[in-house]
Length: 251
Image 1 (tube, rainbow, N blue to C red):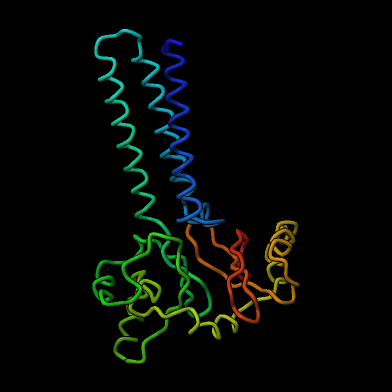
Image 2 (cartoon, rainbow, N blue to C red; image 1 turned 180 degrees about the horizontal axis):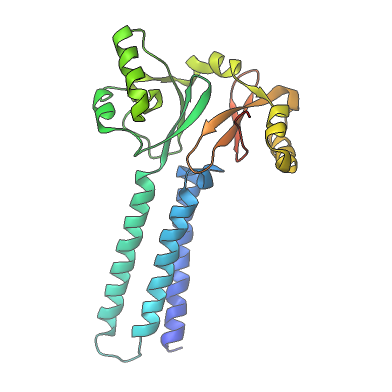
């Protein structure tokens, strides 16, 4: 069947959607799993980029396509190159802001993106085992204050500038080393229900999905970007079981 401008635009749209779906699988399953997709800003950025890219390319095809038109192949090639370039730039933005670490600090978790780290702290941490950043799912670690009084003082003075312990990969430790601290700060699920009176059904669904008695689990707050999350953990092991978009802070 010979293509006309409408069928050509529809075919272009189907191809664009298929490519976007493949990219979505990578972004959602690898970089922004579960509720991180929304709380860390992945959904907003992804749909803005893909929405414009998927819509714009087929619309331009609809305008320029005319069967038998001289130079049509060149026009379509230019459209494809421009669309691919725009999509690649958008994916690079997502990659640059991807979550790389979930860091336990003092009494909470902090979600850290690849572009959250000041250059000076990255230089200071150049020999850290926690660099370079992974291209996979965010890694769960802890961060501890140093024993050296001068370094502790430096970190304390940096606090008001927006740079804190979670921004310093040289202070990161394996999660096993902070499990006792995590256990000490686990809050009961009853507290989560009190903080989210309009989301009791959602909490019941989260508990049911974990499949453990409620007295064996609790939560620790996490700062996560656009929306903070409740990190559901096992009371005995401090293992992270689930991250849920529920208000986690005491009132």
